[in-house]
Image 1 (cartoon, rainbow, N blue to C red):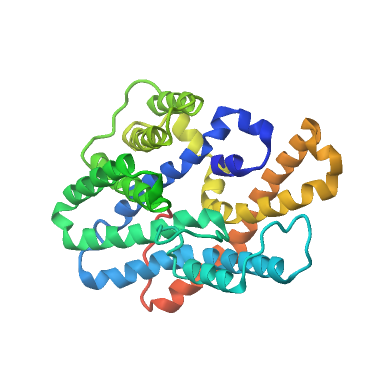
Image 2: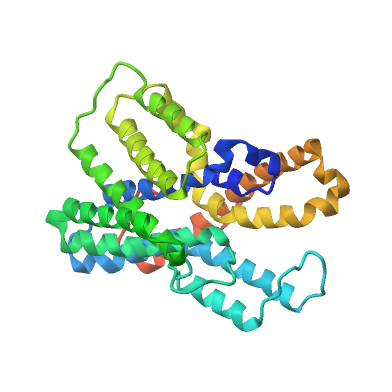
Length: 344
């Protein structure tokens, strides 16, 4: 939800520091993903023969929704390329560039920084690209260095963090791939720490205190993105560990409430679908509201309606595409029953 609020094109909201800094939620996602995947596969993934199944399961989880939105945005770009000229069509790409963008997205390489992209299509999918290839690195590491996987994760994590600090802006999107690796393997280390600590009762809501510290951090103006990313990674790891290693209190019960569990359930479809809703919102606000769109009152109303529409669309995509198609892919790809895997 923070990422969605960050992406919404509403200037007054971006005066709020927590919204303006909302992109750090992606760092939280990377850490959480590593934590959950290590929990799900540290015992089940221990030989080379398990790797193809692991990769297919991850593809079944992420690919159906990704390719659905890729096709929609390709159709939009083709319409812009061949359709009538208009103020809303500011950039027209050639069919060759559109096809290249489609191939990159179909192969999930669009976020690796292999070359400078001209067409982003469904722009949030860069993180899904980096996640998938980080899955492969994780799977290989878990199979090859199963007895030393914590050491492997530590070395990989430290190397990636050093890369974040020393890579300059010329590295482009490759830096995002390094960020994903750093966060993911920090998540693995967080789970390894969880296995080694006993659940404690600190006598107060320690996760709640950490959450307040995180909110204060999100309200600050950081001198550089790199320092802010480091804060996001470390805050995510500390918060996750605090949640699982302390006795449940108010913050834990809040996160286990039905509304937040529901948002967590549809979070992938919500994340992947929000760019399309925002695209429609951006191209319709002045058509529907005219000059009123610049007023705080009407802009705020449109902003709120866009958030509601984004959540509703995420729910729809989850039930019509993500859940049924992922299950269909899994059922068709494997004859034996598939154990339940926590979602990431």
